[in-house]
Length: 102
Image 1 (cartoon, rainbow, N blue to C red):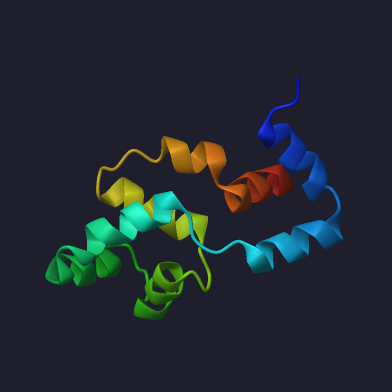
Image 2 (spheres, rainbow, N blue to C red; image 1 turned 135 degrees about the vertical axis):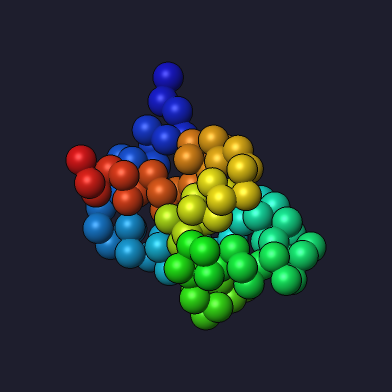
């Protein structure tokens, strides 16, 4: 039986599919959860971004779904002591970047 991760990795072997997918993947429940937590306390948001060396633009791109960067999301998850296991297991962009590395 093939799992979603296996199917996705197989599809990402096709570079054309990979590039289209990267452009079309926007925002997921994990990012929504993260943004909601950050937006609940605007003063803490700015400190959190500064502490993690994340620009306001990069955060806004993440929040608006313009560039959902899983590396930034994971960094923020860790800083806020949030469990990022679902993000690690199910983020197609993260799965793709990990398969590109090894």
